[in-house]
Image 1 (spheres, rainbow over the protein chains, first blue to last red):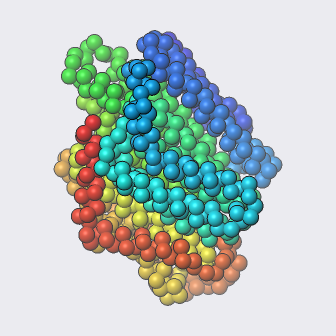
Image 2 (tube, each protein chain N blue to C red; image 1 turned 180 degrees about the vertical axis):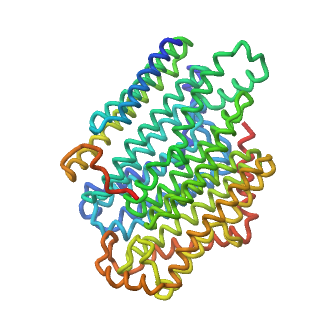
Image 3 (cartoon, rainbow over the protein chains, first blue to last red; image 1 turned 45 degrees about the vertical axis):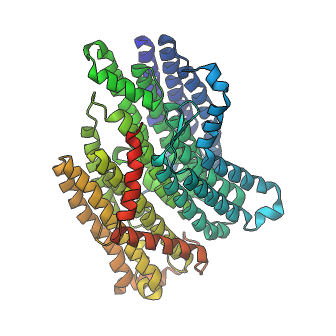
Length: 97
Length: 512
């Protein structure tokens, strides 16, 4: 179980780094999905190790939520693209102190 | 645990449905409002608005009808007890205020209305499920449900660049935090093998009495999991290191939605944090108070300093809500019976002051010439005496001046912290609240004592840039303001009824 959790943590960190450093909106969304899927990997590993089923149930819910979130994300991205003509997040600079 | 015979017995299913009747009412009305979109004649008029008010009213009635009971439904995933009743009422009130405020603003923007109101109802539903949830699965699902509705509502003003940008920032940071939340749940699951909060609580209390050596690995997993989970929840509560979305989202969203996020979403996040803290974080294995202690101090200090520097009233309210979250957190740190009931009281007081203040911001937006810039508020104390006077009372209440609900809230919260021996924290909080009074009172003095220079600004800015210009104050907004005003003063001079209500709700936390 330890090894699986280490791998999951590594994937999670890669995703987090991607969100923090990338400029392209779509790549940021991909990195967010990576973070959710790292959690899925962890859940499957743990529930297999403990011979329980509720971790697997959680995984299904996480996947559903990730899909719903992707739909909203792409909607926001399109709205952003219509207004700015780009999906570079550095252009999201109107609201600041 | 998953016994088939009990699964199919009618009794259990009925019990489950009974435990979510207030939520079912909201779902039904949300769908009715949503289906109004198909009928052009119906959706144009005020039907969606009235239907959502009726839905919220019915839901409040059902909550009050069920209020004495303790029901656990859906195999312990959803619970219903007095603790939930308190927060259901707070959430439904905040939703009601949001709907009342929305009428004018949305008609001015000429946006499709049924979707808007049904999204608000779905947001209320998500918060209610979040409060009632008893397992990590339900916590994650309902937080995501709530967040997704909040993202859409933030970006609802189509064609408004600020609104879209706010939604974008809120979305990226929000999902980032949700990922931390679910990853934290992995480690909590790995440590304990349970997803139900009460099962985790029993497991931890068994371990803390037994020998710790056998469970050496568990402690590491649990620490990682709880910290990651705390990050996810602290984001929703907009505490200091995870606050970055708050000012942007509050400023970009339309003002009723800002009020919705500041009251409803924050209260729901605090409700679930209170439950999770009580069941898991306060176990004897680890001491989380040291971390929360620092977060509370940083939130208060940062929020107040940033609010002092901000020229825009909505941004100022956002920073002040970060500071208020710090004060509320003190009640949870103080802990025990008094701390929790003080926290509940503060949250109830907080929604009335904040909703009232935002209603007045909308009134100012609707009136000619006045926008969100604080400097342009100069002199309106004489033009609109009642509105300016109520704004002063809400701001004084946020600052914590005696005779208002904010003072009593701070009093209960800080006295519980003193009882638990956090003297240094209380000193910092008091200094902060004195500091905060400065910028609240600056707005009031700006309204009543216009300087000559700011009068010139008022004249030169006749074309209000961002606000909408309607020129009239509607009955709904005045109703919201008056209700908030009555409760703000009532909770300040006669808090006993409300603190008893909070005490009763907190009692049920101990009756597991």
